[in-house]
Length: 195
Image (cartoon, rainbow, N blue to C red):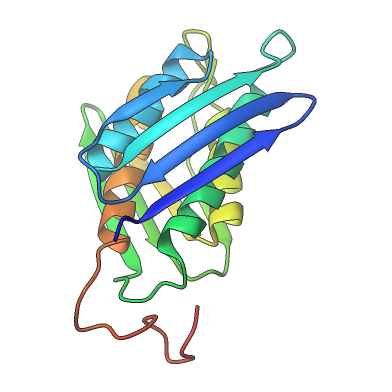
């Protein structure tokens, strides 16, 4: 059975169509109008071995914020649909990723109880024309809409490109681990009997 989630979001600011397949091979077909954001989503997809199809248009003449945040919302909604009630999920995932000068850590729990901790102090906000400060907004929206207890931390590093790309790679790897199925797990992995 395919574990697939879909999301559509249309507002006065954005129009998003998204499909996420958990058991994929890392195929990423994304277009957000923000080339570096597309690059980050590609890193997330490839390292998580998900298949992601995303078409997003937004009011980029105003700001990148609406598009980046709304993609986070849609991706979280699609993830929640793909994992369903959580039956058989390993649920927890962690990844520590080195990227040149930077070392990043992402830990998460697909608990259906959203929480977000972001311990990443960027030395500057911009990578080319991408506002790297929006990574925090993306992750917050993803966590809240995906029901994820998500923690991201910069252990050390100074190159902003390496830092934010490392976060997306670590997020992909941690999520791939958390979404694995274990045949020993009957129903959701919770003492409550549900997530």
